[in-house]
Image (cartoon, rainbow, N blue to C red; front, side, top):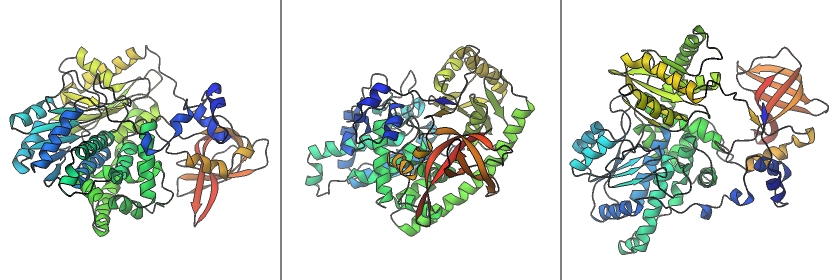
Length: 563
């Protein structure tokens, strides 16, 4: 267990109206006071390469009533980006807007030649806009252009060396792009494109000339918040502004009826909604459709204008999510049994698993769970037709997309295709190459880490006095949200005496704790934790506001508890 280092100079620079506990938290995250503002005018201005090309093409398509097709991705980021694009274009007067999302089992990922051919046959688009995908779709983009279909790619994934031949590519991670934040989710990139389009059309006098009300694109920020949280991108100031504004709109119920229907179904209180509710409640239900069937169900839920329709879609997504959980549990149990049978030891630098009965839509979740358990990069594969498709989840010390680049370069023909981020990637390879990939992958990681497995410890914000463990401080921390990747919610630790404990919900530990050396007793809960034999425990915890029947009380959300 490690404690974040405090930047004392930064701590002293904060104004007196920032509470002491927040000063400590901000100074430990190297956040200056100027970076704390969540005001919408503080958003970075769009400065993307090829933006003007995209704006001129979109203007032409809208003016000439051309058919515009959104091609998204089969996860929550892709679903929200698809919904943002469709809503934005409709608000701007586009008459022929539709969407098509690849089926992961039929088409694979991105703007593939197969999805382009299907789009041409079924939708007849003049323009394809990719959202949350496309940066590696060289063949698909080339086919679209050969069929006289214009292509705008909006994506945030890391680009390959050779870019697709699209009319325009909007991606903050393009080499040479001077947009200051490289952390936008796919839905964030999409939102920026259409915000710029609105500004462009206003300057051209388009809305006035066509008697169209100038759209308020803040109406889309609930979707931007959901997709940004779901994709676990770094919450820099720009992303925090987007998420904060979106959450405020959801709390006020000025948001997608689909989001409201999912929150209603899961009995989440909307007025106190947090980013974690989007990440752990709404996003998994949107994702479940893409994992098991067709993400279009999730997109239609988000686009619903009628609450009853939204409720029906939400119920369908709930059923998908129940099936997803059942399949995930089976696969996780089997994966853990395989790993335990292999007697993983300290020399294990990576875990690579495959079972022909596993579901390709769920391998990413299982890889993530294994990574959390064994603290090393984990790749999990499932059979998909004649090939194996896998998902990898990595640790901070291993940039997995760069590492796959290296493996691919050193072993030509081993990997069919791949793409991803620093912490997550997807790939496909032939079944006969599985063992060779496993060896090459593990060896590359071992070499990258110079033969030393990094020690990954829980990062905390230090100890609190009993007088600081209060409902008021819990409320202060809640008000300082959104918390997330790169702006982690504070975790504190201390030595406690275990006064009382019981199991609730069959697998969660509810307990009463007394800080050693103090008299105050605190209520805590530790999920998936059994009873403890000892009375003296070291606890890592978050300060949480527990709301129950209109009453609020302090509760310690226990991250770890041990003697």
